[in-house]
Image 1 (cartoon, rainbow, N blue to C red):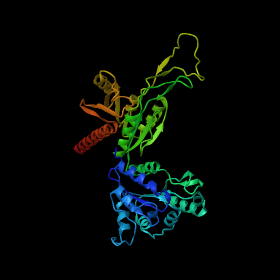
Image 2: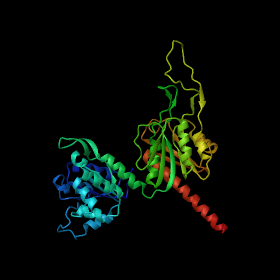
Image 3: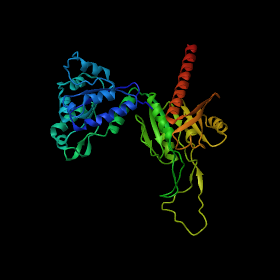
Image 4: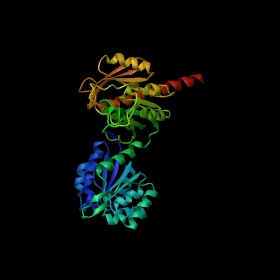
Length: 410
């Protein structure tokens, strides 16, 4: 999913050994759909060539304020072009210049001229990082609203061990992508995802095979489409979606508590979690021992119906999922009506190609008015975008109808 499609990132590279990591950072941004322009300080070209960055970005790399081909305003052009400026690696020298407002090369001039948010990823020897001057400069950057990523601790190229290593490209990517996605979000959506776990004793529980992939894909798609998303997730092994606030829970009761609280201030709720229908009537405080008898009886009680409870809220567009193994559309239509939903996504989980833990899915989108839209097999990321777009269309049509009725009454 190209979560950064259309976004423009100005990457500043300074003279540190970590400059080689910038290539991986460019790759991650581009894979996410972003357009990247690189600016290098004179010292940076000693560690990585402009040709390498030009080959990766597909753009001319800016290095010299007074190059023969330069009109003298490349720093202004770069500053105005960017949605986000990132310096990675950022040496102690460049950090000091930014703190003091010094513009003695093309990169520092572009930073001074830019109104885009700035992210700085420090990279230097641990003693240089700990120096009082560097710490004071970093405090100045924070006070100005400049975001810092890292540095990390560990083994350094000089042989020292300590804090000063540039954060890994994956971490810089996640934080910068979150900043870009979050800009302009104001509509709130709450999504539940994954399984729940209902404890039997301290080591055993009732759960299911849900991987959470569909719910996480929906959260990412909603964020890309401009929603401010709160994801309430059961126990899964997936990383948090970029630009999404994730709350991790275990039981159905915990999921209901968070979903209800968050949905009261939301415009849309998607119940994608595979919630356990039942839980043990009582939970043993210690591990239940195996005995010589021929079995073990477990008394169960019904869990609260999360989506039906949330759907009772006023002015909330509620979407459910019907994950079935047979009579898919019959059960889905019944669930849509009985739980008072605005939309339901019916998907067959009996197939290993589109069921739990698979990367693909196929579904039928069923609307409150009875309309049904089959969606063929595709990746869960693509299906998530289809679903979010369908929700956006329904909400837009509802808003337009309400506006028309209001104008008719005036």
